Amino acid sequence: MFKALGTLGVVLLTVAAVVMVGLGFLMGPDHPLPWIMLIVVVAIPFVHNKMAANRYLVWKDEYSVGIEEMDNDHKKLLNLINQLQTAVHYYTGREFEEKALEELVDYTKTHFNKEEKLLEDNGYADLDAHKLLHKQFIDKVNQFLEQYKQDSELTINDTLEFLKDWLIKHINGTDKEYGKVLNDKGIH
Ligand SMILES: [Fe+2]
Ligand SMILES: [Fe+2]
Image (cartoon, rainbow, N blue to C red; front, side, top):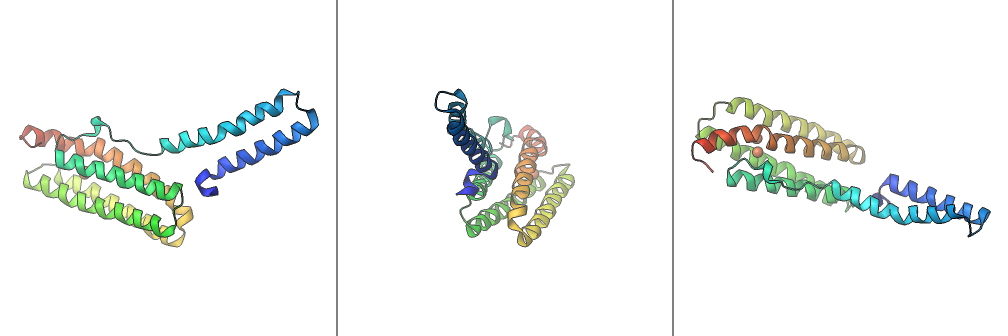
């Protein structure tokens, strides 16, 4: 439960509650400060939920590479990242977290292979550079997975942030480059 609320949220709630009760006893119910603190305590879960919602990735049309199959893969990757985000944030258990991580990494590899084959089949000039970026990403993910085995609690948030950041930047940057080239060849 504490993990779901977040460490900062728990600390703030505890501090606010203690201050509110303390001031209430000291100043009496006519003093505004205990009531202000009460509002703060009530507001914290709403703020926390809003912050939690912002952690989830939402597909935007601007991410489209103009090739339906690749867009569908990218959408699935975003969903798998969100699934991992849920497993981490609501701490559904180590087993579910590992399964979500494994599913995301496996599907990323599947997608990379499919994407590289599409680029190769269409004689994409920057194929080698694109493949290298994919390889560097997988190498980095493997490093995170090794660290995760040593200490999952310490590593999982960094791993998740890296996956989110890299994949969105890659989809919305490097992948869009091949999108334009292949679109010009009539591939959609
Ligand atoms: Fe891609
Ligand atoms: Fe790619």
